[in-house]
Length: 224
Length: 224
DNA sequence: ACCTGAACACCGTTCAAGT
DNA sequence: ACCTGAACACCGTTCAAGT
Image (cartoon, rainbow over all chains, first blue to last red; front, side, top):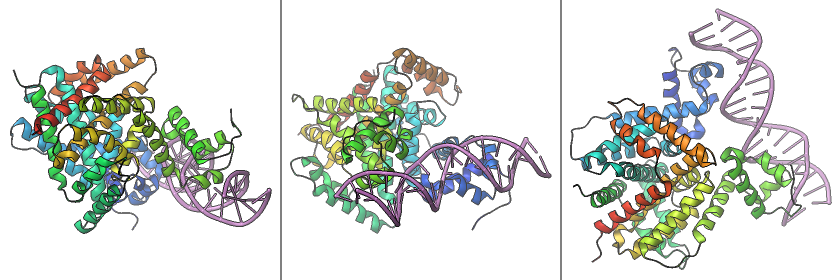
């Protein structure tokens, strides 16, 4: 169960293994102990290739996001392009649920780093093609980025509970029931919306949100 | 520097101290060691009032959010109400930057817990008053919630760097310069948007994003 | 240049024992 | 019922030593 290949240790192999550990057990699964065991080395060897745990997490995040955004597609309307980028991230976060908090953290750490510019660029160039005036590019792109990352993360949390669809609807049912049990005076809206939660299509609802923001962009900035 | 009052230990006092530690040093500032020192007790005493660190973090988050959302205001248009709730959270996250990742985490953990329903209710009741058809309440509210939390968190990160406004603009300047230094072929949009970053008003830009989503909601669901 | 592995400082958490 | 404090298991990280 311990070691695997005898390939030379490399930064790339460390990152790859980190992603495997994260996929298997989330952020708490990524420890230097687990890493040294899988790679059959000592901690010192890993520290020679990687500065610290934070840098390793960032690198793992960057690797997965780069893969998700790299997919080439036939050019469609700017709206279709935005939807495609959004769905690419949606799927990546569904496959790697640990991505969601990690991406928020990297966005929050300030817009430096390599992932934030990449995500902004992926959405922004199509926002630009939408005919939005330059002064509003940043606002419009931010709205898209934050919605996509937030909503995809919330969806991943729902999915994560169990692989088979059966348990998943069971989980949503439980949440829905919990919401219906809230105080009627304090939570009228949440109670009213609880059944929407029970039976909805994730992707559909996610895309409806993207379209809502696209509509907002199009309406506020109707092209000259 | 160690202990303070000799008030009886209580869950409330533990949570209050936790918030102080978080405000001072972020999530890494909240340890049971620091907590026992400030409260002049042992870890066992704290564990008698609190299940574990996760529960304590959740409670601290809930306490701060409840305060931010409790502010009573004169009733305005639904749009104004949404803006007021958004700004309330914006300010809370600016005062307590550790809130941003924590709120994402609680949203991501699934919509149970006490904070998620509270935030959804605060926005949702005004979305309802906007005349949105019931089938779209959840989507519209989600778009607002995710944008507000994401954008406020990103802003808090920018502010956190230093208190005096001087260092802050210095920081934004540095990020802006970094963006301008990116590859021209790979990052045309990010480069073009870099100067927008340099001199913008945070609150103004934040509110512009809220209005963009409000416009989207109003346009997609024009009241019957 | 790259790796080993013991050691260090610091966590969250437990629990027998006290009052 | 509430608190004490030593102890445990487990972290990330360092570093002298090897090749």
